Amino acid sequence: MNNYLVNIDDPVLNGGQKAKNDITRFLTEDGFKELNIPITIHPEDKSLGAQIRKFKDGFITIPKAIKKIQDANNIVFQYPIYSTFIMNKLIPAIKKNTHANLIIVIHDVESIRMFQDGGYQRDEMNILNAADLIISHNQFMTDWLNQQHVNAKIVNLNLFDYYNPQQLSMNNSFDKSVVFAGNLAKSEFLSKFNPDFPLTLFGPNPAEQYQPNVNYQGSLDPDELPAYLTQNFGLVWDGTSTTTCDGTYGHYLKYNNPHKTSLYLSSGLPVIIWKEAALAQFITENNVGFAVASLNEINDRLDQMTAEDYQTMKQNTLAVAEKLRSGYFIKTAMHTALKELKEN
Image 1 (cartoon, rainbow, N blue to C red):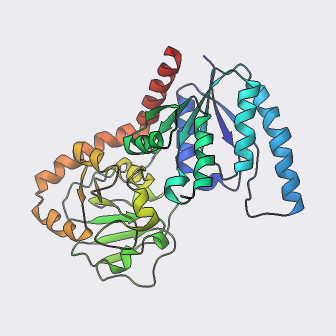
Image 2: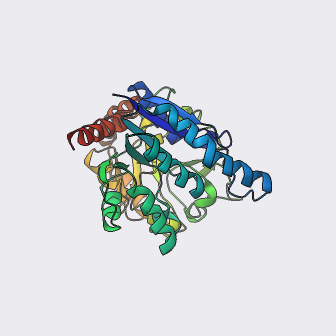
Image 3: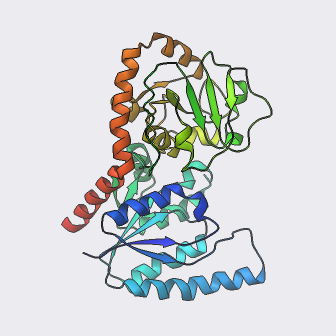
């Protein structure tokens, strides 16, 4: 069986694509061969030179690369790439030059997250419908895709794996400490939040000032950050409010698997998450953290928690961490996907 993973090898974008890079790592461990297509995507560059490069990439570079894998049985592509033009050249090239099944692994569905107008959504659903099988984040995202008449077979990932070479946090002392990592410009709620527990922040674009118990510790590379995650819990929250997750990013939590959840769990930290988030069910059912409707509930939940309660969560989290570090979830989803395609 010849299984290929097709990547757009963009030196500008690759630094910020840990989730995609990790899936590449884990699938190649599982026997997939890589095909890296050297394309640089600059959507904001409207110069004549950029237009010529785009034309060359779409009509020459992509078909030439795909012709190298005409023996493929299955081709995996990680979606999205932020060029509709390139996307609309890549899929037809795969269909024309191979007889392979096309498997799309979803990282984001922009029709849910950012662009909810009819035209963009129609185009995005057409791209996804070109797949023979889709690996979706979770059942909530899958249900949404089905409602939009995506007819491809769908397998749920359930959780993003996270390559994490740092030593697992074995901090078993229960001090009620919490950490939040991410782009702080998108996390306006932090400026309003006044917790009774110590809250540590990591990430770019901090606010000028936070409440006394909130301690900003700078911005670190994703591969370095886990070494500094020694707190009791990691927080998953989005939006402007402390009482609910609102706005574009808050709404998206109802459907997606935030990568920071995997960052925390792979580092050995149980998670505190919004009750309406898609991953809240996974967190609570596996007892690797707890869910709240409002940030104002966290103080009471921590006060009611015993050291023994925390130890149980911690041990459950360490077991999930080992799975995330080994690529368990993408490998399991891909095995299921290949089996379904073989049977049909």
